[in-house]
Picture 1 (cartoon, one colour):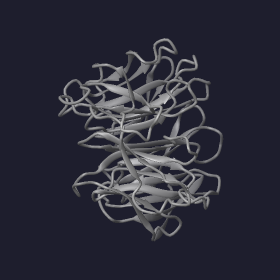
Picture 2 (cartoon, rainbow, N blue to C red):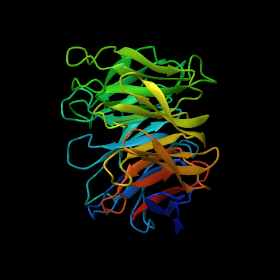
Picture 3 (tube, one colour):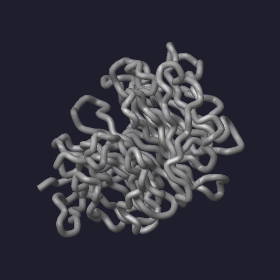
Picture 4 (spheres, rainbow, N blue to C red):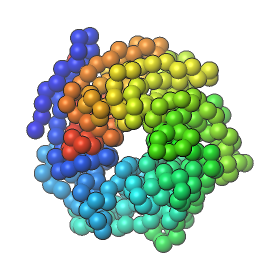
Length: 373
């Protein structure tokens, strides 16, 4: 099913909404080309199973993994080549369990049954985010993972984990706790980028408050570089009193050559950005309610970074047109869609960035086709 949507006046693009699945409550969806046909397929977690849905008609479903209980679900996920065999594997984070990855058997056997399940870490628990990024500059992607439960696991901490020498073995990944006990609150989604220009990626997170103590802040941890990358890092508070802070992603918003942070208060209201290096807060959208998802890309192909979000509170999907100087115009794409996870990805291979949306209580996964004029 597809629905043609129009943005409000002044927008440079319209959008077409395509339904991938309407199978149930969904909090994460990611895209990869599983069979080499140059079409982006979708991996999602719904009703106790991780499934691969094949483009372009989504009628073929390959079940990659089943959880022991139907109510188990992955709250977030990422794709990366864990074992270096040239195809993308899938890493998942259980809301009430440990992080794990599923081994992609390759394009010739992608649909031959469930993908091999392996644990990443046995102590980190209640994860809310897994982020793929090369933290130690060795040319291989690592995973940044938070410990969401304050009284269990690696309490009030966030770690980056590097792949062990033999990822197919039973040994957990190499855990490096960089936010060691100073990530209180309900830490949510992370972003990683070189903020200070020294060649090493910093890591940022948003943390909600209630029912968690000492939350409602955005912060990043400064990467100390080669000599200290595996130890604790210095925390830099961007802002506190940020009700239900949730999501934070990096990007040069105002075109000054410095990497800023774009953020959302995903369990209250508002999308905003922090200007590097003063970290002054600039508002993008104060009206959107529960913008739990956030994406950054050049949606109108004018050379600057735009933003997009979807608020599950008022069910608005929006993209924010940047004028190149950090001033944003709000464009509403959809007025009847929820989201927990929103990704900017070229779903149809036409060269512009579309949006893939895990629809939370809308009980669907949809993608919005960017129809650039």
